[in-house]
Image 1: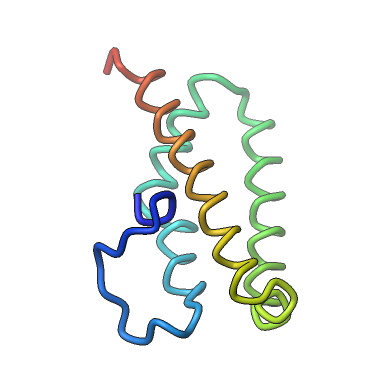
Image 2: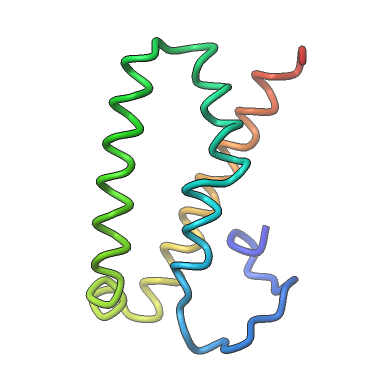
Length: 104
């Protein structure tokens, strides 16, 4: 909700810096990853999921490797726009997961 509405629920230690790495690691290997894999397994074949995982790993590697360049390229305003856009996407995925798994 912070990403979409622009509210600050958790105070940042250094608000002027963009912290991608602390946000990225829980998304890469957290509980959400396992939940997503279980949800995908009910709808898609294992081969399709593996291709998606490999493509996602390559994309995440590219983003984490080029964090400083992307920061300079987008600037502060661009990063704020991306944060809100990806917040909306994340919210849509969460709603889809809840809707599809109501029988659990």
